Image (cartoon, rainbow, N blue to C red):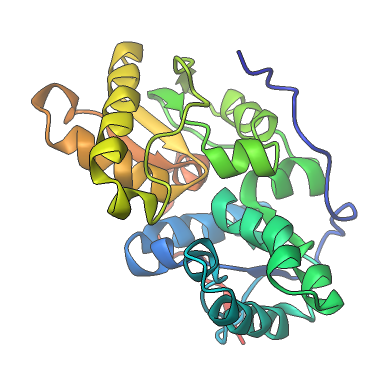
Length: 268
């Protein structure tokens, strides 16, 4: 049983109102789920946070690093560090990629500047709760929701208290705990390609647990986990009614129905 209070503390100073925040958009969001990036921007803008999107950003290097291509990963990591060097706050709507930056940059590259930049990266919900001190985003989402705690966020960054606290404040939302919420969904990046049978079996267990909750929506801080889970649920009639949504989409929802794209990050 996971305690919602079991998490690491903030990794950066308290956010100074009005200071620009650099948005790091991971590959899965950029290529497959851009609505998650848009929701992140709308949410931050609603909270008065100026968002900057550095256009020279690329992948954080995690796929290459996890596959043993450390030389190639190091090149991408250094590009990341150069791109985000001027920003004190780097916010990422993915615990997996935030963990790559904060935990594994130091293993992949001995450069002190790389480690310094990587340490600034925060997953979205921990930035809101730990750096901004926000526990109520003024959201409205009248649905029954359960939460999947992904491996990187839970085990590398200690993230659980933050998303649960934010979900608890959402108007109209009925939260139901997911059985074995901290068990892996089976995705694991290239693991799902190299060991598809085991990956699907693990995902099936996760999907069945989601079904047991009676939730209309399963959300997470990682869209890659949700992509895997949703792919399994789509193929089973009893599960097709369940939506998989990134927590940014839930938190960006408002009672007045704000339209996507009303706020946009400043390109640079």
